Length: 141
Image (spheres, one colour):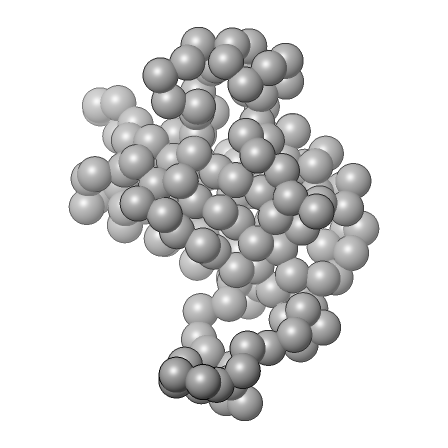
């Protein structure tokens, strides 16, 4: 199952946002969640998660990634797909997003192709069973 706009605690157009919603969604068995990534404000310029152009509150990208890392495989070892709606136009913040994912997810993050499944036209893809315990990122800019 997948979840759209996971973070709002009330509705998708207004309300308080929380990393806890990601935790609860994964613990309920959901295997695909969306993260609306936006550029953070100076001076920290920490990337944020929010539903753009609405009145939902902002939460730090790092806090969401930590919540996902803590709860991704508590209920199921099947892979988790993170669908990034990426609105970050700053190279510095893009680098922060990548660093947080690598450092916080560690070995859980699928960063290389599997030897048995080369990225070639016509090659098959691994099954969910072969990706157990892995986090995959789908990025849409």
